[in-house]
Image (cartoon, rainbow, N blue to C red; front, side):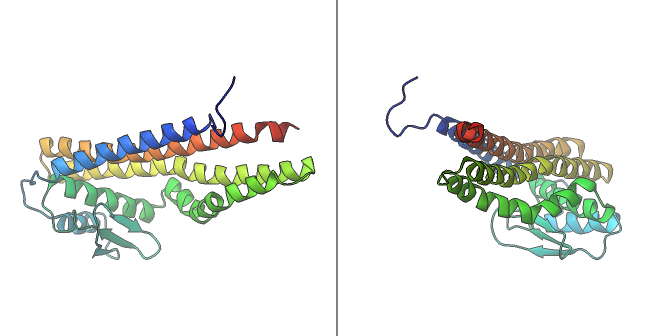
Length: 235
């Protein structure tokens, strides 16, 4: 098949990944925006909910901090700190309680030794290094005349990028489980009414889709690398 000069057909895989991520991000932003305008029946803030959930789970050593930004919420297992963003900390919306409870879910995972979370944490440094060094190794491999050396560097690059992909995949059960814990706690404790839990589920489902999109995009990029290096690796 003939392709125009400088056109790389494997870019289609990258574009598909970008589109998937953009759609997931737009869905997340629109869903959060919608339910951030729905006040929960008790008037409880995200910070109040987080504190109550943590204490209910016996976690009195987890600090709750306010962090600037929108949807920058996260739990830091290194310092046992739960950070809630502007849109969550003082908000009384059902969306805010859902996000706060989700992050509490990560704190509970950490406290109970949830295996996928431990695996993801151990992959962070190698995944970051792998994603940064993968392409330099692959490109360097194409400059060697020796096919053995060339294949070695290319395979090292593929292995490095595969670690980053593995991190994205391992992240999925961690995020799904945190959301499941959040919805269960919010419903069982009566913090949210049944209809409010349904609204919160929509927010957390939309958030989960962004992680699915990220994993899909990473897999497509890995497939592109395998296609680009296929001939050299088979020499």
